[in-house]
Length: 155
Image (cartoon, rainbow, N blue to C red; front, side, top):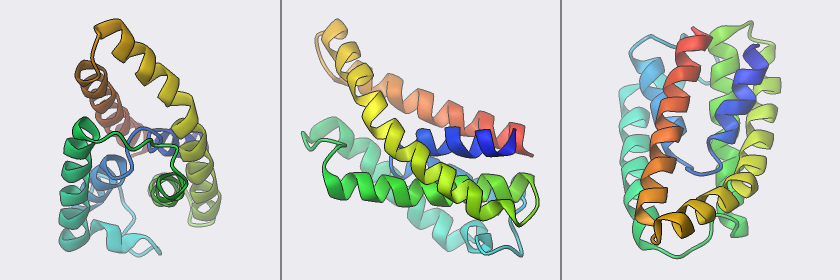
């Protein structure tokens, strides 16, 4: 179950690069996700959590005003890297330390799959609404609620 959660958390990095990892960082900072003493324990420190939050807020805004595709290769690489952090943290926080690397691999894989799988859904929603903003906000809500739910299940 833990590794499935790591994959799904990574998948949620497909639509958003920084929101999932910022939420995981704050979950660790507040002690909801126990990754202290692991290789990813630094995520739970206030400074990284705050920096990731600023990046997430910038991304949430930028997503509404830019036309750059999430499938642009540097964006996919960034999503995979953040998916690895999220997947690894979920696996470490919910399981034994040996599962961290596998959780990271599954998170990165989920992020790449999520990048390509969620784009057609976003485009279809935007077409249905006649504009992109409602689709983007729905996507934001799904990512945020999904990560919160995963952290709750993982702890």
